[in-house]
Image (cartoon, rainbow, N blue to C red; front, side, top):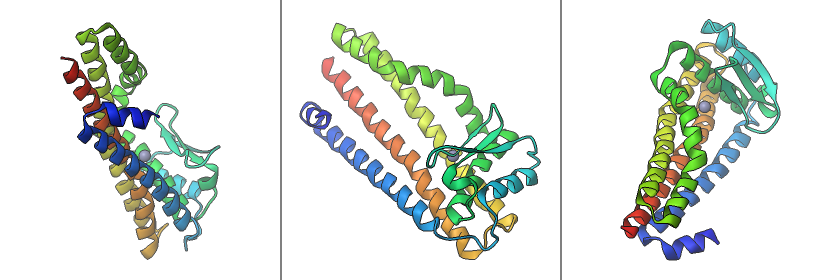
Amino acid sequence: MEIFYMLFSDYWPVAIGIIAALIFSFVTSLEVDATFKKHNADYVDSKVPACDAARQILDMNGLYDVQVVKIKGHLTDNYNPRTKTVSLSESVYGSATVSAVGIAAHECGHAIQHAVGYTPIKLRTFFAPVVSIFSNSWMWVFIIGCYMNWMLLIEAGIVFFSTIVIFQAITLPVEFNASSRAIDTLIKTKILYGTEVAGARKVLKAAAMTYVSALLTSIMQLLRLITRMNRRR
Ligand SMILES: [Zn+2]
């Protein structure tokens, strides 16, 4: 319904751009699942499960105070800098596959970024609370602005939304850098060998593409808001 409304009410190049971005994000999510599954059938020769791989990587980087825990869900893996915890999902934690080890190493990559003070992750952590407020309120501000025909509110809604786009753009180097740190440490620790490294790279690249598609979708959405604002002027 939303798609049809959008098609007939938007400037057509923007509508096509949004549909292309949505298709890209759909294909990307399928690709993430397929790549994860494919390399989750590849057991690593070192027989090191993801939880132990994470421990080794963290210790190698002097991060003895970062804990590794198991959490519920599928691909819910994350690193929390406040609690200094690498959380690995049930399908990753005890699994000694290329996919599981790759993902565990990626989350450790985030822990290392925090420890070494990697600038993009510092910016991301700093702006996260503000962006969270804006992402919950931009739409209301924009809609009320349109309803009251108050240009200042419409512009404020767009500025709020722009901060989300900037935040997503800062996320890209953070994610790609965590993955490259992950691959480096997996080679150094000899947890992965030869073709296993290429497999882990593919899994992490597919996962990173979800952040690229989220950014593209937001950029198209921003263009949509701007064209709507210009039409009102
Ligand atoms: Zn990440």
